[in-house]
Length: 144
Length: 415
Image (cartoon, rainbow over all chains, first blue to last red; front, side, top):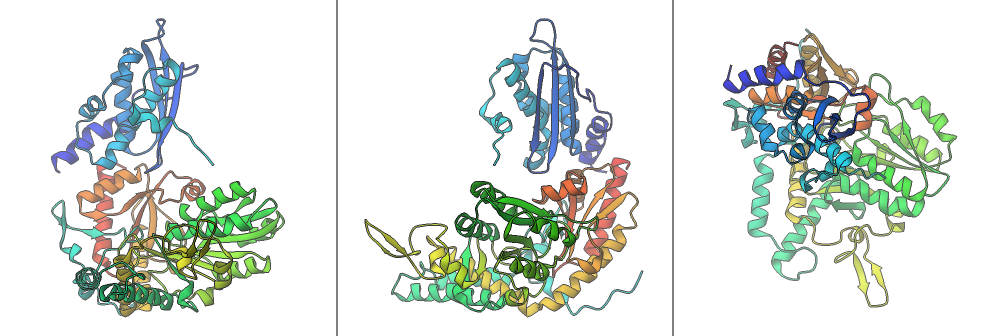
């Protein structure tokens, strides 16, 4: 088994099969959902803030999709809990990719950062945090 | 398992025409099982295009010099090859487009905007590719027409019983259907739909992108009014497709794009349109690509569409029998004898993207996703499927490697 396969198995599959922060949060203060149009992956994210209205007290997600998208979102919930909304809004995607730790092709990269984008949209809507151009496409919903 | 029927294709010899099969992916020979998405290109097509560029290239139609004449001859020769390939009555009815998608958009815009309105009904199917679905959905909403769909049964076959009810909804004006489903491989009863459409005064639009590479196409026998297909799925280059339409319909339509080539005369006061097919070919077309398209049709015709169809039926039978033995694997769509060389499936508890990634470690190329058929995915109750698809160069050995790769997927995921 190659090193890559080993890591896929250990890191990704652990989070995929036992996702942290899985499930909707009743009465969430921030919420958004997004899709990856390439593969139809879906992620919904729910955030509850602490008494200061800034600190992420709890974060949960629901979704369906590939192991990378779901495992990355699971890892993300662990990374952002206890942090301030403004910090998370500014969190570079590289930090998440480092956490995932396996090399990803451009297509799989989109899977990996779907949850992060949805979280940024949720924070933007609830708190008006800046939403860099890279993520704005996720927030648009133009229909016929 | 039954002994495979003999096919007349010498796959070994044909594969020698495709340099890509010498390619290694992750140290293994590539097993290309994504031909429904796009086919690989034989050297006959590539060599001919290079030669065309080196000896016969200029812009088409307007030049009076020798190179322009040669280029025009090559381009118009390709139009005649397309005409013959689909048995169209006249090459004036054959329009080169950028793709099958653009051809279908051309019909939806140029015919649909002028002919649809409130009280009218556009009928599509639940297994339509987005290219023959979204343009009609959009034009229906623009014009106030209804947008109705023919549902499918659990085998992925059209439920024609639904037509009677659909007919009560208004004036049926368009029926649009793919001859072969790109996701399930279902061969659809387009001839029957064309009769029904005409009985109700509607036009029949056929998306043949997934059919034209695999079986004889005869627009007159199908009884349709428009038919679209693309070059890149028939061993030709990407960037060019063809639209065939009945002359009286094309004559009555306004152009889709405006610019050079499509005009007869232009003045400050008014502009008049060129004759068919040029009315619909604004701007410099994909000249060498159209030429290559024609060479590709020669190649496929020489291999023989009957032999290709028999070869694919053999492959799909082998694939469905072998895949069917893998526990937890579910195949979508009709039995092998009612489909072309396409098998869409799901592996329980493993997302298609992960299936495709692990197969790629073994050098196997399959498609994972919704295949531009999201309404069909919804009907099947899945977000995506994994799809293996075959063509004239595909082999039993590649399918056996797919099966071994899928066992590895299950092992990796503990599924």
